[in-house]
Each structure stands twice: as C-alpha cells, then as structure tokens.
Length: 219
Image (cartoon, rainbow, N blue to C red; front, side):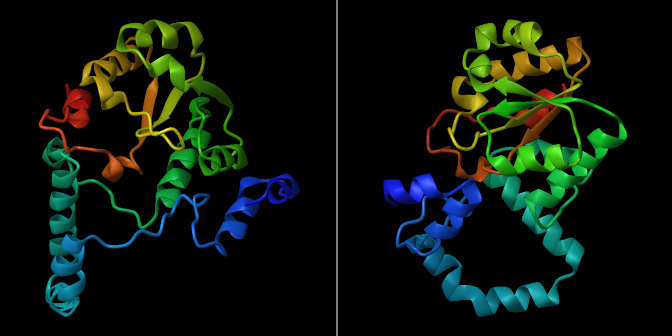
C-alpha cells in the first residue's frame, strides 16, 4: 500500500477493503491462513468422514465434543466444571450481548487501549459511557493493582487477551497478573469482562504450565 492510499482513506474499514485485493493482507482481523500439513491430513482429507459423523450425531453431542476439545487445546479445561458455556456463532454477537447488558444496567466501562475498532464502535453505538484503560497499566503484575486503583472510575473493566493489535497477554508472567486483576475487581466491585477471541493463537509451545484463568475466576 502506498502513502497515497494511506492518506486517502478515512477509516480502517477502507484500508481493509483495499487490502482484500492484495496478495498479502495484514489489515483484516480475519486472516486467511494456509493449512498445515497436519491439518491437511487430519482434517481436509477426512472431510467426508467428518461430515458423516456430524450428520449422525445430535446437536448436543457435537457441542459437547467441540467444547471439550476447544478448551483442551486452549489449556483452559477448568471452565468445563462450570455450567455449560453459551455458544454463539460470532464474537460480534457475543459483544452485542455484553453491550446490551451494560446498557440495561446503566454501567460505564473502561475499555483496553489500544483496541480494535469494532469493540469500541459497538459500545459507542449502544451509548455505553467509556473510558480508556491503557494497556501499559497491566504490563507489570506488581503495579497492576495500584494502576487500576488510581485510574479506573467506571463500573466495568473490558480487556482483550491476547490484545489486538499488540498481542499482549496477562499470562506472560504466569498467573500473578490475573490474580491481581481479579483481586482489584473484587475489592472495588468491578464487573470484569474479558474477550478471549484471539486466545487460540496464544503460544502454548513452552513446557511451562498455562495458568487456568477460569480457576482463578472461580476461586
């Protein structure tokens, strides 16, 4: 994309539309990725078999299988001990549900910054009072609690983890940051909202155990 193209577009959506015509597209949150060799052999080559299995199973059985495997891959299986998670077909629908709740309860929210534009736009459209929650307030677990205590004045806290577009995650330092975040929310009666839309892209290749955020929430 040339400097001319960058200057002529008024918002990020116009950049995304332009990028759809390019060989390489870094402007769209919905990336188009080639399948790995394992995905090709384990999924693509078995599509007829998988289709038949899904036709023969009930909706409930397929949902149970999906949830079990999804949270196993994310290494967050503790959520399966809770009441069954509610499934929606798109993250934007979940976002509208959250915004509806905030509007109904007349709650204000601190939204992580920087943040991809659709979260802000949906909240703004629903007339939710918003304040920025700067990502750097969360970088160090030892200062996280005090940073939020000094800066948050809203009823709710809204995070994206890993964040988009920075990739920052509270899990980079183990479970301490999440424990401090939850401690603050409990002490100051804040509703905590976390968007894990990009959690499947988190790097769990390390031998270190991945902290269970749902166990932290429950405890």
